[in-house]
Image (cartoon, rainbow, N blue to C red; front, side):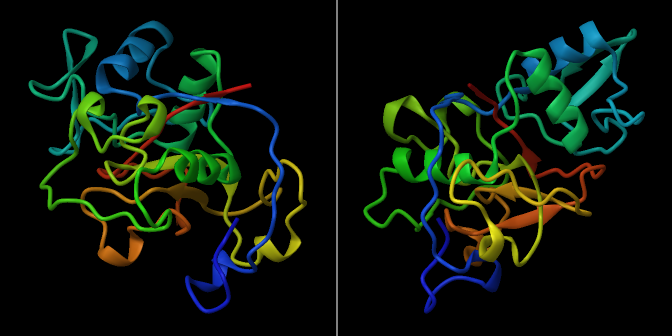
Length: 217
């Protein structure tokens, strides 16, 4: 896990070996249709007391009609965005899973990448996300783990965590101010188009380029 000393960013070092227990990872990022089903059954307020999803942003892919959440036209099968970390975590639990740890995400990305260089994410220029079923294909039927939207992970972010990380099933720091997001997005700069790249976001934030997928033990 991580990057060699001569490459990558400071928070990707040191390069170290990590052992993970078995887990299942969803083939696709969670769609707007799936998240609307969750909202209509469980309500829009997440475990932090705030809305799970922001719909008042013009770029939000979800709207509310007669009290019911629904995807905007053309967005049913695109990955849900404008969803907070708390909303994503609540959905994952409701669906019988959880958010991946950063280590699990990195392992899944490396093992399912079809690129010759497993740390290279080179994508065509896009103006928005693509439907999850036709996003960048990977091995074993995985799609979109490389660059469709950033994906929330369960870990808090710390620049120095790799130096302290346990060798088995690392969960990230116990506290923090930002959560890790991985994978890049259709709008990310070239410098972020790397599997090993770690980025972070405020967990109560709503971002047009951040979604998620779930894992299950």
